[in-house]
View 1 (cartoon, rainbow, N blue to C red):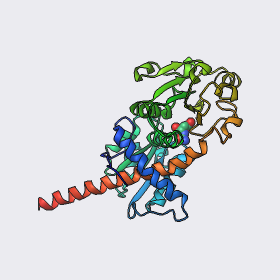
View 2: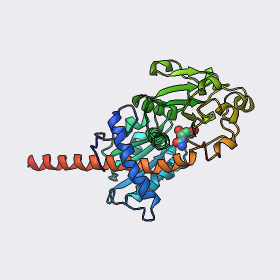
View 3: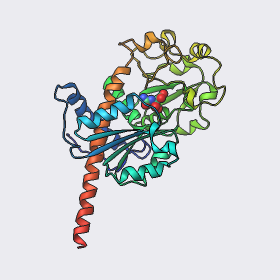
View 4: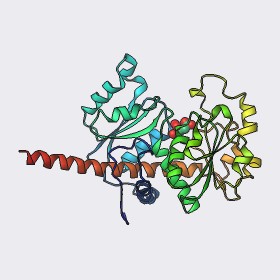
Length: 326
Ligand code: NCD
């Protein structure tokens, strides 16, 4: 990779601990993997000899497939643990499961869990690199990084953009990681949601808050739609899906308030006709939803590559220390 590379993390638990230069490092390296993934020889060897274990305690289609493909393309031995059938069902704790797996000497552990903070806790108990694939309502760092790469490629920059994040913000780790990342890179962020789906005190992040779609979308460069996460709601957050679509669903009329060249994003899975109209989701001139999926594999390859380099260095230092102590 050209230029100066800065990345001093041992884990990727969130966007919060990353410096802007580290974010840029991941994105620059990911660009190289975009090119590799588009070639017919999609194989690198940077994770050769390494074992990657994917532990998904919550269901996932694209994120798990993306991490699996990323690891395989980098030459790792990849194992998917289906946590739905694991010993957790027999009452084993998350930490016990982690310690058991740790004894099998994985090098990279990719974890998705329903509780905010669970992945951080786990990272303290194992001696390999841990990547957060989404923890509760907390963070989903690789999603924010793949969104950033998509935006940078489409808009030619990742600063001074007006980014509108719309929908179920209260339950969204995607929104949280994105607003931290986009804030660090000095963009103007607008959050648009009905008051029941807007987290309290969010103004502290230096964002503008709207409950009217048309006002919030005015002049936006990027429109990021979020799924209505019914599984995380415990009551009447929204009246009906029809009413929600009417007020907050992205259709051509509402999108016309954003800039003429605004791009439309969605992390998936989409509820068509609830938060987004199919005609917009499938409009190749506006929607970058498929690009987001493509960038996901490249960003995960970059993140695992960088963590593996740091892991190798740390192990080498430990080995030298041990040798010096006789
Ligand atoms: C998101 C997630 O799991 O947080 N999806 C994803 O990673 N592709 C968003 C969602 O579930 O709505």
